[in-house]
Each structure stands twice: as C-alpha cells, then as structure tokens.
Image (tube, rainbow, N blue to C red; front, side, top):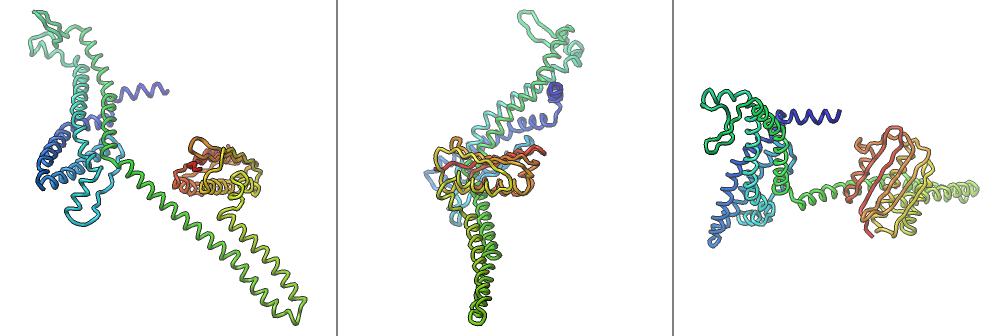
Length: 429
C-alpha cells in the first residue's frame, strides 16, 4: 500500500497544485530578483559614493528601508506559493524621536543589512532556478507530447521529423516509431522528475528567505525569553495567591479562633478554673494543628529536607505521602543548583499528586538522572492512562513552567496502558 501511494505521488506530481505554485514561484522569482538586485546594487553604489557628503547617509538608510520592503514581498510570496511560515523580523526602533535617530537605527540594524544582502545572494540563484525549472518543464512536456505533433514536421517543415543531429549531409531525425516512442519515454521521465527538481530548488529559496528575511536567532530568543518571563511572573503570582489563601483560610483563621478561646479561658480562670483548663487544653491542640499547617505551608514553599539532604531524601519524603507505593531512584553524580533542585522537587510533587488523584494506579516509580547538561525526571505509573498535556490540564501548566526555564515535558499515556511523564531541565551545578 505504501509503495502504491509513492507511485501515485510521482504520477500526480506534474499535475499537483503544489508543483504549479512552486513553478510559479521560480518563474516570478527571476524578474523580481532582477528588480531587487538592480535597485539594491545601484542604491548601495550611489550611497557609498556619496558618503563623502551627507547625502550618502540618508540614501543608504533609504536603501536599507527599501530592502525591508522587498523582504515583506518575499515573505508573502513564500507564504502564498510555498506554504512556508516565515516570521516577521523585529521592528526597528529609534531610541529618540526624529529623522536622524531613525536613520541611525536603520543603519545599525543587522536585520536591515540582511535584507540588503538577500537580493545580492538571491539573484544568481533566481536566474539558475528560473532557467533549470523552465528547461525541465518545457522540454519534458515537449518530448512527452511529441507523438501528437510529429506529423507537423513533414507537413509544414519539409523534414521527416524533429532533427537531433546533422553533420556533412548526414542528419538524424526522430521519425521512426521506435525513435518517437523513445522520445515520449524521455519526456515522461523528465516530466515526472520536474516536480522534484522544482521542490529542491524552492527548498533553497525557503532557506534563504528564512535565514535572511526572517527573525534572527537573537530576536527569536528575545521573544522566547519575554514569553517565558510572562509565564514565570504568572506562576509566581499564582503561587503568592495560593500562599495567601492558605494562610487566610487555614493558619490565620485557626489562630484567630485560638486567640478568642484563650480570651474566654482567661475570663473564666477565676470563677471556673476547671472549664478554663479544658479550654486551654483545647487551645493547646489547636496550636499543634496550626503549627502543623504552617509546617506544611513552609514545606510547600521550599522543604527543609531538600536544602539539608538533597533530592533523594526530599523525593522519598514526597513519595511516602503518595496514595500508592512509589519506588524512588535518584542517580546523580553531584547536587545541582538549589533552583534546579527546587524545580525538580515541585515537578515530581505535582506529578505524584496527579497519580494519587487521577491515575487509579497500583504502583508508581520516580527516576532521576543526569544526561549531559540536562537533569531528567521520569514518573511512571500503571494506572488507566489517557493523560494529555494539550487538554488544558495541570500537565499543560507544568509544561509551560518547565518551558519558561528552558525545560521540556513529554507525556506517554496510552489509554489503559499507564502513564510515563518525562521532564528535563538544564543542569546547573
């Protein structure tokens, strides 16, 4: 079946809409490349020549701005004809308002200079791509359809067929049935190969547009860090709200009630010492409960056992509170940084909470190890499976928090086959 699909793809290639769009991209790329190249080279030459005067500066800035305009056209062509996704480069912003700061910002922009470099590099390739695509396309169809029009040569050109070779009175014509069939076969081969040749040519165009006209790695990294910073801020705000809610609804409310009970006990101390003693005893129990809640809250912020004894002991403590038996294996050559330990601890804690609440598992395991410059965590259970990090659940939030620190989360959870969640974060000793 797969072989049949491959043959069908080859046969329908010359008629596919993608092939025609890519062919149109190469054909229109030559005149546009010629226009870009001519205007860019002329503008750069004139601007560089006029740098001895002030006129060269605004002219060069104008050429760079023009290159950004060409880039918009090319990105639109790639999106429309090649189906590529090319992001917009970072906008050029001047630090101060005014014409001179704006020109300075354009002249200092690496993105603008990459846009000017594109026509210079693209034009020779556009000529090559245009020529090769046109030759393959025209020759392939002309040879393939030769059996349909070879009769026109003896009828109108006074020769038996298409001439291939002629020297000193000897000429070889494509006029015999075998020669006509061989010509059609060669045309069929060229026609079927043309879509793949065109696809290879446009792949180079995609690379040129993406690398020179798209956002730079630095721009992409800045955007990623800005997004990650937002995720970190949102996570921190959510954690603060959780701590405030836990304090307000838990320890704070209990301490307020405790203060009231101790006040009543103080008032009854003289007239009813036995009742006052009972109230003090109850208050003592409330104090113990409040202290336990405060310890749990402090453990949720950063457990002391993690600081004192490391991940192995801290994760073993978390595993002991899980609803199912958990086997913990931590194999680390040394302790990572405190921040990485905290991320690993809370990641495993949240995953084990999911096991307790949702997995319906009988057993679970936690494995932690180092691989190169990454710390890897894996939590496995034999529960019902079906977990999906894309469904907007807690796993999605956990994946977002890990992504904010250059980490990653992978979930393997077939229905009825248990769940394996693998997380990785950068190792920082």
